[in-house]
Image (cartoon, rainbow, N blue to C red; front, side, top):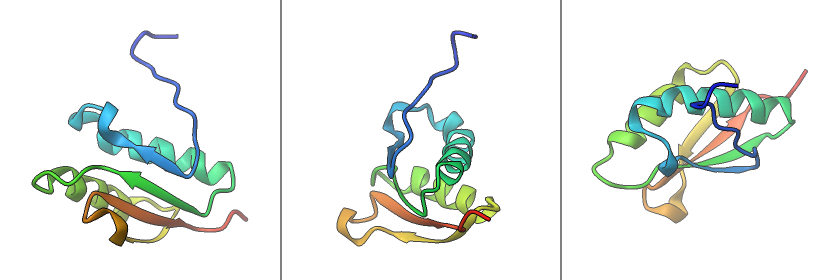
Length: 90
């Protein structure tokens, strides 16, 4: 296994702070695929508030992902996290 691959436990909340900004889109896609495979329907992606660049990247990735039914800012986090509803498993 290459040294640059990280195994991350998949649950209903995923904090993206540990990942380099250049990797966030790929990480979000991989996380959503795994969350869906595990049968999760609702997940929360924590991207932080900052100036909104990471939030925009995450939400663009969500718009392009085929397993995402819908998403919205988590009102509890003041734009620091996004709630995602995944399509049901067949």
